[in-house]
Image (tube, rainbow, N blue to C red; front, top):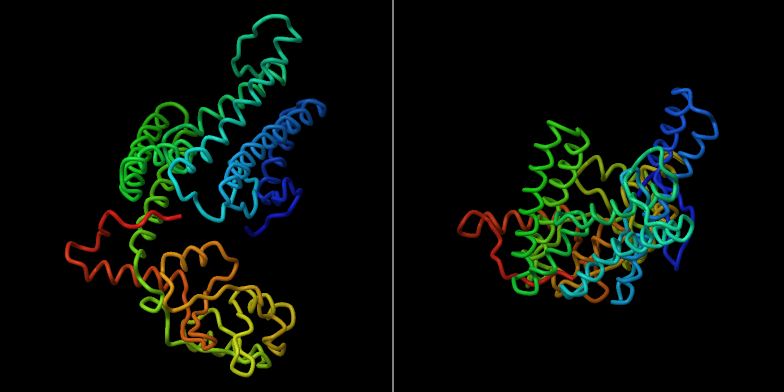
Length: 370
């Protein structure tokens, strides 16, 4: 994610903080100082927010380490003002595995809350009443926050963990696509409820409603897309009319090709062999730094995956999604025969759906995405 900086690596997983997170900290500092609060109290507020986000990191690590047990690697975890984002390479193969991965995050928050509550009991000698009171001690508030995080993430709506739990339970008895549709519809129903309540009470609920609605829609669309790709070879969807660049060509040649057509990423060959890919982002960055006189070989990426034309489109698309390169060169042996991009996959699915009787809705019963 752009505008993110690595701040740590835990259990081999890079932890990033997004630039907007620093805006949140700045806002807390500014609000405290402008409100006339003592500097010590303002710093205490910032430290409390940082502690909350540390528990969010642990929440995401719960997902990541549980997924690791099922052979799924986590690429990174990014802290945002609205929470954390753990990027798994793929979703688990089995519904029960997805259930465990989804449960792991809220379980971490519950464990933190239980530990804090036990500490309160041992230090106070009584069973404290938990309520988010700004005047309460930091440990009491931290306990309530972690309980709230666990409860909020258990709401049965995408993109919260509860939506994935619900989908996993439904997928034990139903087709994966149908289970996703039901979970997404329930999530969107809850979003409408949140939005309605937010109009008459807390406006923040309206923001949550939009977040849940978009998350449910995106999840349903992605699963439907993957189902539509099942059983189709890459050769049916790949782009066959494309341009290539020689490794020694100047960047100006790439600029001319970009301006002359719609292609954005270019395979790079040397003596007929594929050796790299020049992406649009890399080209634009290079033009800003050195102009158009540099060589393509100095800018291209050598870290890319390839596909075989006989490979199934579903598996190739998953690798395209999880990879850093936005294009997947397609080879026949060592010969470059096509390109696969997210755009042309989407166009292929739309055309295939339009040609299908019934208006293009994918049939249920497609293969379960991994």
